[in-house]
Image (tube, rainbow, N blue to C red; front, side, top):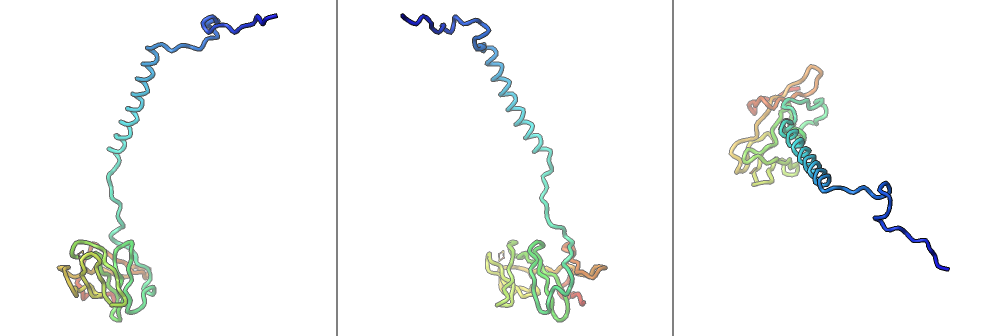
Length: 169
Ligand code: FES
């Protein structure tokens, strides 16, 4: 006895059971909508980037350098965030820029040699900023340094002062 059951050909299935066919028009319409969506997202991203402020955030030009007791006498302390040396001598405090006056590299305090040195082209400075060896054309500038009402050191990088002005605490 043979098996009389057989699977129907796909075309012979009722229309309700057949997978929905996508017409060429529907397919092209969906591809077009997808492309427009991607283009719209790209345009929105570019618009957002265009209107967002192009700002470089830098540390404030006036800053607190803490209590004077933080700095021992005859010390040079590099404040990396501010690129400033706080120098304390027997005479008092001064704040010296750590930016080389040659081409703007960041200098380094060398306690073993008692000097500030620039790693870029070899300029050397005394702790008070005077040039020992070039090519730096000028000494490191001194910034205004004062005591705030609460007794902390207050440095103003917008105000360059004479190197002989020392804050005596
Ligand atoms: S940038 Fe300092 S020596 Fe050139």
